[in-house]
Length: 185
Image 1: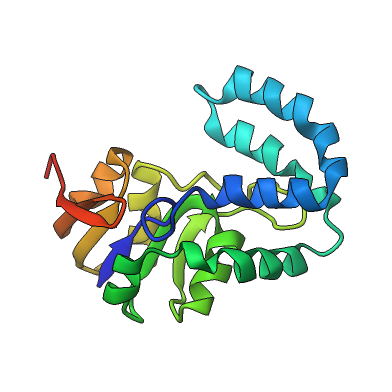
Image 2: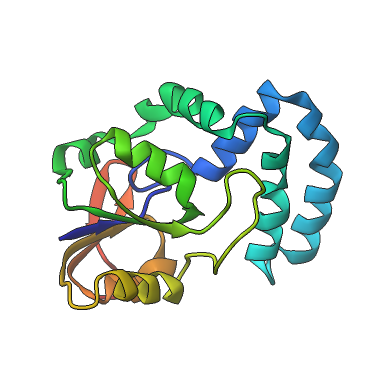
């Protein structure tokens, strides 16, 4: 089995930020939340990323039909899937991400990949129902889902994924479309 991070690994860019900007453009009333988001970014981004993200995702409350927005968003943004991933993609891939599960799963279902482990965020309220899927939490969640599975290859753009990279037979750092050997394997 091959395991991939999502943002800046499978796709170009950060899906949470891209979806946020997409929704801002289509629903300008979300701009009213911007001062609060900025305050939370200043206060919590370095110390408690999940608290900041949960506040940011509060804009989901302003969407009448989040599923319709997701569908329109991915209609426009599936072109962000990296070519290297499309060449390597397998049906048994596991995608693991700190982005919201509803956001990542929607894109991966379009590619025929159904195994997604990501942050448990309610698509209607923006509230987390568990921990942000980042760093060691990715390992914990992976082992919870696949207790005995071996990871053949792991790909990520971020060294914060080193705990998961250490579980893999081979790990690659993704830079654009290039796969480089993991630096601290």
